[in-house]
Amino acid sequence: MRHMLALGLLAGTVLGLSATEADKTPTIKQIMQQANKPTGIFFNLKKDLEDDDPMWAEMRAESRELVQLADALGKQTPPKGDKASWMKLSRAYAADATKLDQAIAKRDRKAGRAAIARMGGATCTTCHKTHRPK
Image (cartoon, rainbow, N blue to C red; front, top):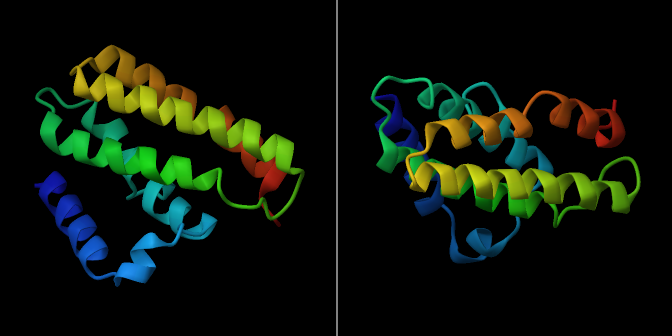
């Protein structure tokens, strides 16, 4: 049920955008809200990988969206800190999002959990300390 709600919200968001809005790269704030807030895609997938019977098809749709958001993050200008650091951190985040998507495509829970672990925790803290304005 949680997956259906998330997919419904995602579809409504995508369908509600005009063609010009859909072509725009989302802002850092939009990316963080969709991907990383407690009800965002990252935490949904983290929780889903713990389920006894994951809903792989729904998870794949979410993981693809997370890859797009992670890729878009690197196209932004950091609000604080240097661009080289931003590119290094955002590329690593995007690479882990891709690994997560690949693990979900293969229904490989262990690899998915490893990718989620790399994406969260210290990775978030490092980027926030370096690039997030106070």
